[in-house]
Length: 184
Image 1 (cartoon, rainbow, N blue to C red):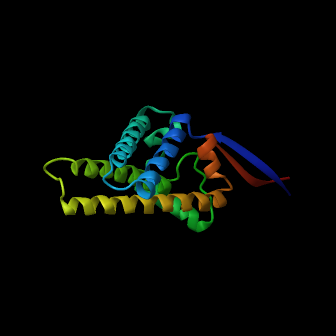
Image 2 (spheres, one colour):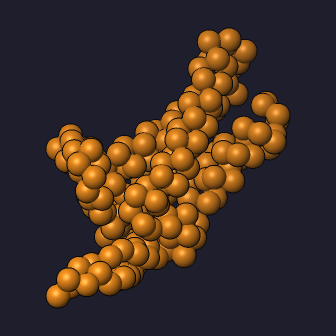
Image 3 (cartoon, one colour):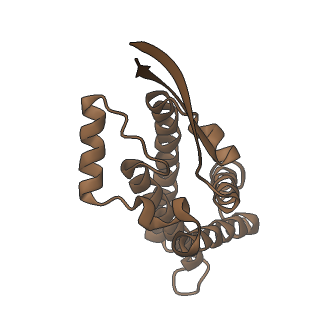
């Protein structure tokens, strides 16, 4: 038998997904690390992040195959199978999101929308100055940054496991898998 290198190229993330992803990254990093809480710019960047997520949700139903939630929705069976594959050393290749990555991604979308809602609520007469709401908003922001860090770390780890540069794929939209096959 002879080992030969093989490459598989898959067009995964369309332009909308890539622009959405990096725009959301910019919004989150800017609001968490650059702009002071309570500034008008902080509010507008938060609203922009919420609009991005709402657009992504719509795209999850009408976009191309790998953008659709049905392509990667993390059912309990899909999550169990993916974790079993990882434990056994199998790569369990997924063209789009793997089930655990999908779970984290959906959680991040929910947290961004929760941040938008709690941020908006703080601007209303009913909730102006409510300490519990400010604390909830801050906790959600910290949770989002923790999820984002987990997401980035997982992308690096899964890139190594799957022999696919996932960060490059999120820039170009194309996953290039490198591997070995055995032939006679």
